[in-house]
Length: 240
Image 1 (cartoon, rainbow, N blue to C red):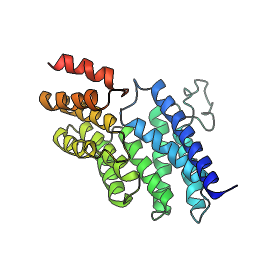
Image 2: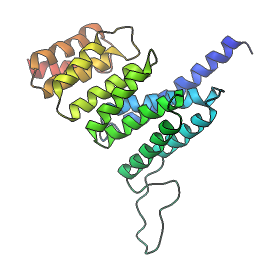
Image 3: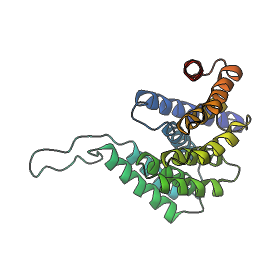
């Protein structure tokens, strides 16, 4: 098989995995923070990428895969029978699962800080902190990832995560600045319509209705086929 064909197969597998992650998000969107779609998708990308990449990072990649498995483990209520133990590989609550995943991701970063797997784990740890609503810690973790990411996809992803952490801390001006910068990059890794949607909602929370209308209008005008289009039109009508 030619190298180009192998590369295409790898890309297709990553795309399929990412699609499965997005489907999972859609099934649970009412109980997950908006930014978690980014966490899920990057988890899928990282899983596909590190699954096929054979290099000196194998051990770190193996630890990353194990941590990601924890983050996707089943939630099973704690047993009520006296003396009964939690089933192996399950967690009684989503919080318990996220805390276990956080520890696992942090272990990867601590042991292999200079590897790509270590960077991916650091991003995932930041996402876990966000889902645990430990916003100040998440903001710092995402900032560290962005500083390390260079030109990789983790740079803009981490900036998006940092904006969501700012929103969690009610630091709306900081979030709006980050999201405004990301929305100006039409050739970046993030879908601009998705960034604009987050920007508009941050503006609403900040009480900046004119700025929110401008962001929603960009979705309607520039991305007529966007999945956020219908909601953007409804929001525009409500804000007028």
